[in-house]
Length: 475
Ligand SMILES: Cc1ncc(COP(=O)(O)O)c(C=O)c1O
Image 1 (cartoon, helix red, strand yellow):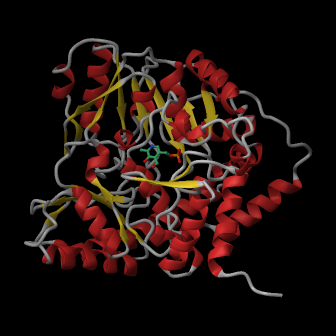
Image 2 (tube, protein in one colour; image 1 turned 135 degrees about the vertical axis):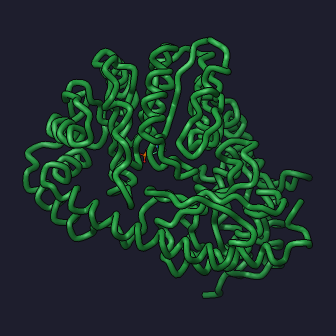
Image 3 (cartoon, helix red, strand yellow; image 1 turned 180 degrees about the vertical axis):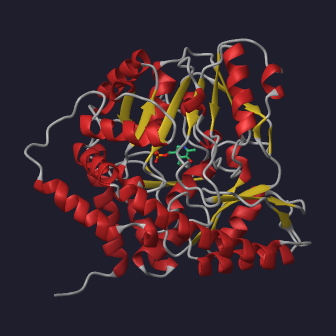
């Protein structure tokens, strides 16, 4: 049988994608260069294939927007026009993430890159064997796998209650809601507790700026300045009175790595109580201390129910479990539990039982000891690499835990340009401007994911970009 020419194979594959609706009408198809890479052919073969698809009326080249799918065979046959989903994409209620954030999210699974961006433990730090045995044990106990209670599996909530007690928080299972990661907690809070027009006061920079959660719910983020002890209390009173809440990441802050001091925590609580400002305390990095345990959570000192407390197993054990929690007054937890039921009818029952086993067996605390030791090694290797390669162009503080080093770059440069240049050298980093537009010249590096050797290689590549200064990286 005669072999099909290469261009015809490409035509067939693209047609199939259009027919199956994977590339619906209105979608942009990959560039010629990307198609050549995907199909492992040279560009002229791709061009022949595209010409054929254009001749058939399936795609169309549009100036400024690339090549677009304009028809599928059904529409060509003159049948009822299909919905143009792409037209609707921009009309949804929820705002899109910044383009750069979307790109980072995509590239974080590209294993060809040195990942200096990832807020996740390295695969080597994942307790594979223990997880396997925990899962085996849990699966032996399955009698059913139905939905769980609205607030989450009772064994897990009891286990979280005990876990919190050790960290100074007294919370009964009825005031705990199990969520699919702290991110879901933020979503539930944004839609369930606050009217449109609320201002969310938060550290500037903050992880929250890299998302569109509160803005999509009609709220505005208002940044508060920080110093080495955390958010500055004076910056709170400077803001006008209106419906407001305060969101803070007091321990090993993302992205700066700053831990709020004991004194500042007390002052903040005092201030918020006086101003009747509810607090959302995002404490997902708490367990990842390297030098000293961070000061007790704000929630531990809150006796008036002013603080909603968020925790998660994502950073310390496994983001794949998608298990986190919200702790707060029962009426608030009941409201959020109802919304959660409307959204996903509960977090995975399997994950919940696995999480409960980790916490109740003591294996989680054992695992933390190992993780802290490994993070200490990685942090020290990272600092050594930074001292060797970037000390003349950047400055940073040493984080006492968590994953991140927040680098201030001294020479003038445009962050997006640096991001592109780093990518071209196979390095993914998080530019500071995704954590608030006008943060200045910062980048966030993570020492948790890349191996110490890769971290060093990555940083040495970055130094080369700066050595090439004078050329074009400034603008
Ligand atoms: C401060 C902070 N809160 C919440 C999250 C989301 O965590 P989870 O995986 O528990 O949803 C992250 C993850 O990057 C984070 O840095």
